[in-house]
Image 1 (spheres, rainbow, N blue to C red):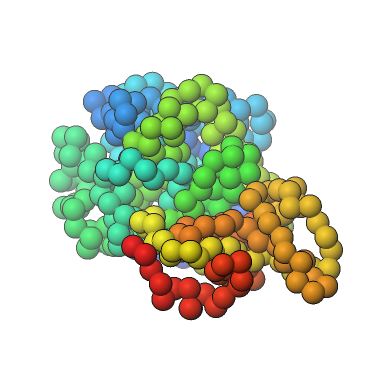
Image 2 (image 1 turned 30 degrees about the vertical axis):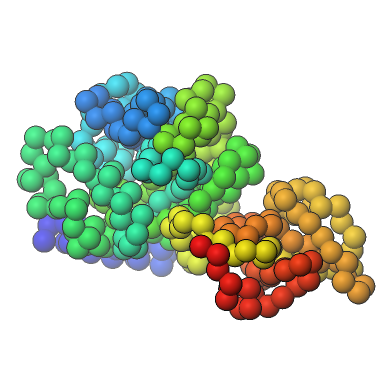
Amino acid sequence: MQTRTKHILVLLTLTFITSLTSVNRLYAQKDKFVVVLDAGHGGGDSGNRGNGYFEKDIALKVVLEVGKALEQNPDIKVIYTRKKDVFIELYERANIANKADADLFVSVHCNSVANPKPFGTETFVLGEKNTGRNFEVAKRENEVIFLEEDYKQNYAGFDPSSPESTIAIGIEQEVYVEQSIVLARKIEDNFIGKAKRKSRGLKQASLLVIRNTYMPSVLVELGFLTNKSEGAYLNTKAGQQKMAQALRDAIIDYKKEIDQNVGSNILNPTVEKIIDDYEEPLVYKDVTFKVQIAASSKDLEPKAYNFKGLSEITKDKVGKLYKYYYGATSDYNKIKRLQNEAKAKGYQSCFVVAFKNGSQIAVSDALQDASN
C-alpha cells in the first residue's frame, strides 16, 4: 500500500509539472544532470562465471570507465552504487538513486545462457513482457536477493521464480518507461555503430534493481560471457573501453536531447522497436532472405556510410531502379532481427524479401519449406 501510494503521488506530481513546463525545463531545474551508475553484483555475489570470467569485475571496470568519462563534463554529476568489490542489496541500489534525485539510473551486467552460441548486447527497460528468455533473465538477476539477510522483509514476499511476482513490479516505474526506452535505444545504436558489436535489441522484463527507481532506468547486458569469443573480448581492457565509450556517448546524447527537447519525441517514443527474444535458428533450405531498405534511381556504393552505419549492404538493378538490401541469410529468425535493426536506424518501411535459385519469390511461399 505504501509503495502504491508513493507511485500515485509520483505520477500526479510528474503530470502536474509536465503540464506547466517542457521536459527540458524539468531537468534544467537542478544545477547538474545526475547519473547513477550501478555495477551489477559484487562481493560474495560474483554474477555469472561464463568461461571462468567474473561478471562482477567486468561490470565494475566498465562502470568506472563510463563514470570517469562522464565526470569530465561539468554539467554532469556521477554517483556510483559501488566503486569496489562489495555487495550492495538491490533495494539499496535504487535507494541511492532516489536519494540523489537522479536523472538516470544505468545498471551494467554481463549475460549468460546454457547454450554457448548466443552473443550480443541487450538493454532492458522495466515491463511486463516476461515470457521466454526475458523471464529467465529477470529470474537470474532477481535471485541475488537470496544473498540478503532480510530479503523477505525488504521485498514483501517477492518470489523471483514466479511470473506473477515479476509482472506485479512493472507498475512501479510505468511513468518512466517511455524515457527509458529512448535511452535504451541510444545505447543499443551505439553498441552497433560505435563499438561494432552485435545488438540483440531492446527488451522489457521485470527486474528488481530498477523496480523502485523513480527516474528513467535501464539494465545493460554487455554481452555473453558464456560465448567464448565475446567473453574474451569483454575481459580485455580494450573491449571494456569500447563498451564504456558507447555507453558514455549514449548518456550524453540523451541529456542533450532532453536539454534541447528535439529529435525523438521524448514523451511518446515508439515501443515497436523493442526486439523479440533470441530464438533458435529457423533455416529454410535453398532460400535467402534479405531486408529491402530502399529503392532508388540513385546508384550508391553499398557502403555503411551511405546507409546510416548498416553494413552487409547489397544492391540489384531492377528496371530503372536500384534496390538496396541489408543482410542475407537462410535463417528467418535472424532476418527478422536484422529487420528490427534496420528499423532502429530509421528505415521504418523496410521489409523482408526472399530469393530462391537467384529469383525473388513470395516470402509466404518460402516459409512453406522449412528444413529444421
